[in-house]
Structures are given as C-alpha cells and as structure tokens.
Image (cartoon, rainbow, N blue to C red; front, side, top):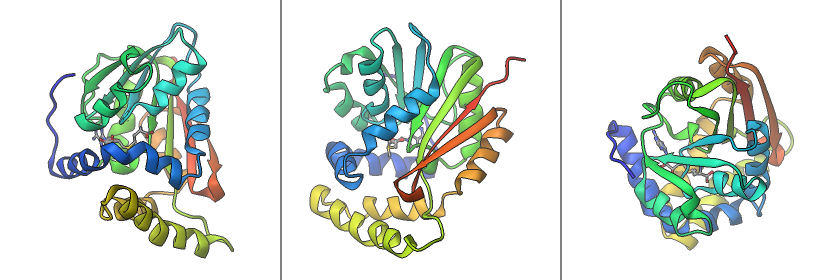
Length: 236
Ligand SMILES: C[S@@+](CC[C@H](N)C(=O)[O-])C[C@H]1O[C@@H](n2cnc3c(N)ncnc32)[C@H](O)[C@@H]1O
C-alpha cells in the first residue's frame, strides 16, 4: 500500500470511512436487504472485463466489487485503490483478499499510467468525491481505448407514490440502523444526505460524457434509488 495526499473534504470523508470500516459490510447487507451483491455483480458485468484482463476498482473500500469479480472470473488481475487504509485492511482479511493489489490513492489523482487497465469499476465512490467530473476523467484516462467505466451509485428517490416511503427509509431508518450497528449515527446521516444531493442518473450520464466517455447506459434498481452506469472510452 502506498501513501496519498488529499484535500480538506477528502480528509473528512476518509476519517468517516475509517470510523465505520469494521461494520461497513454488515450494514451494507442489512440496509440493502442483501441486494448489494446483486448490484455489484451488475457493475462487474457492465464493465465487460475480458478473460485475463486487469481491472481497477476505484474507491474499493473493503474490495466487495473486485472480490465478487474474482468469484466470477478467476483469471482476472485486480487492483483496488482507496484513500482509507482501514477499509482496505478489512478487505485484505477476506477470502481472496490477498489476490487484490491494494493501493492507497486519491480517486481524483490516480497514480497509474494512461491506458493501463481493461476496465474501471467503482461502487458508491462518486457521491463522496468533491469533483465527479475529475474522478470520471481520471478513470477514462487509465483505461485502454475501447475499455469500459462502470459506476454503481445511489440515486435520489424519484418522484412518485413511493417517494415518501423511500425518504422515510433513507432519513429515519438508515441513521437508526447505523447507530445501532456501528454506533455512528453521523456517518449514516451522511449517506441519505449525499444520496439526496447527488445528481439523477441522466445528469451522471452527462458528466461521464463530458469526461470523454461514450455510449453511456444506465440501469436502475431498488425503486430507482440505485443506478449502475457504464460508458466506453472511444477507440480514437
Ligand atoms: C461507500 S464506500 C464504497 C466501498 C466499496 N466500493 C463498495 O462498493 O462497498 C466509499 C469508499 O470510497 C472511498 N473514497 C471516497 N472518496 C475517495 C477519494 N477521493 N479517493 C479514494 N477513495 C475515496 C472511501 O474511502 C470509501 O472506502
């Protein structure tokens, strides 16, 4: 693992994830009724990594996406980059954790050469960075032409009959669950707040496009509160 520098808001985010690292996976499973694994699989499929390919998971946390990717395809080489060491230390203890090359890095300044990965994935990263455009631009830079960037992220609850129930779940139940399981209500108040402030999927597509990706598609889950986006780096 290598060292990294980050700005002020990055430091706060890093401290928060450091505090919840121990309970992160359990809470994810509970909050999503176990569906988080299905969405991660969807992001992996969307990334379309070829056999024997090399994939970067930006904001890898405890490595959920790449560990699941390895279960599907054991020939992959996987790199997990994150700026919170405690999250990666939890991931390294998991089965196959030693198959991941863990790198401490800021997603806004990836320490990799241009065009060195077949694909880049991220799970719940973009909502946390201070500049989504820059994060996607970095991801587009490090994939080979023709490679894909796949992004799994929460989405603001769409308008409609279910919205009040979804807001109740986000703003009341998630902080309560966070408090009970991790003792950190603040971190699980941050999640609903950043989800509601995050751009809707069509705007995320526009940011990806402006970062140089093409043929952007997305799929929504969990009543529209989760989205998986994918875009391709043009061949020329
Ligand atoms: C919600 S967790 C997601 C972890 C994992 N990707 C998953 O799917 O469960 C967000 C992760 O992004 C990391 N992160 C946030 N901003 C970052 C940045 N600027 N550079 C690197 N990692 C960042 C955090 O440290 C945290 O581990």
